[in-house]
Length: 112
Length: 112
DNA sequence: CAACAAGGTTTCCATTGGTTACCGCATAAT
DNA sequence: ATTATGCGGTAACCAATGGAAACCTTGTTG
Image 1 (cartoon, helix red, strand yellow):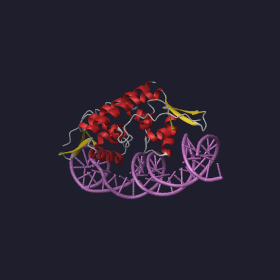
Image 2 (cartoon, chains in turn red, blue, brown, purple):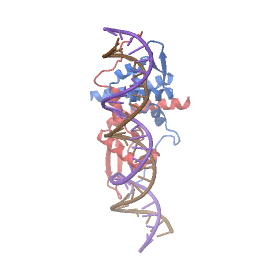
Image 3 (cartoon, chains in turn purple, orange, red, blue):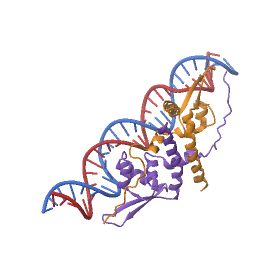
Image 4 (cartoon, chains in turn green, purple, cyan, brown):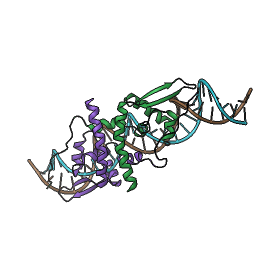
């Protein structure tokens, strides 16, 4: 005989805050890109050095996606040769708070 | 002329706490599975109802992965027909803290 | 007896991610 | 003068991941 448990899942049925936020930071290396922009604007090649395993293709794709999602801004600087700077929007900075929590768990895991 | 900026990325070069933790919760729907186990053990079919868009295949794969990573435990109950219960380990509960931060940002996004 | 539930597995296909090579433009080195 | 290098990407190609639908085994129910 199979005992039944109440379906006590306490989340709203139609909209899930977790998926809601995860959708914004989804995509390979997205969290890392946001994280490395937290201290101020950075350029394409700087980000590529910050995150050594990322390829140009993927970095390029993420920067475009995160721009479309309103997480960061792309600014072309009028230098010669022109350089491109990426910086977090306000939304981006809100995400950093969540990433901070993940980083803290990451440190715990390392020390354990 | 191109102004140079110091490479001020403040993370350790060899090990990244962010990727470290992200690796544990990676995989489609992993965060949701962990989240829905935070209140106590749940069974396969309950989780499937908690997360309607997930398929059996992916749920099955995630539960196996998260078990191998030490995030949750699988327990077969001696009922008829046998049922299977999944519950978070201590590590799993640590991850819930990080997910909580993500959920909070998710709520902010909704209200904005 | 036929139907259904639990806890998955199998098959098949679309999307994503990763690797390598390359481009156009500009300065820097030899 | 020629070559190399840095910048900010794109193109072509292949491997791994994710999703939909059907199916399976053991057992209970009507």
